[in-house]
Image (tube, rainbow, N blue to C red):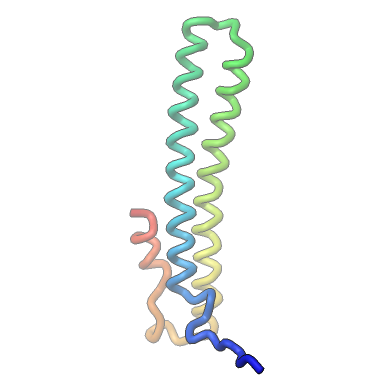
Length: 108
């Protein structure tokens, strides 16, 4: 009979959560930059041809995407703050590193 596998570390420990959050923030920043670059492209198209309805619609869609990517970053930061609050209620603050101080590292 096979033995059960026991994890040595929690699958959602603090470091793993921070790594995933940093990746989400980096990807959101990249998506935002690409959306703004595409917006500029369609803006140039509109400067050449102000009657281009498709370019107007796509330009608005790019702005919505840029806003959504910014909102994703804010949601991640909000979740990290909630996690820190929950951890600080259950553990002594001197024993654990504060996520507030580590947020600076995530956004660099």
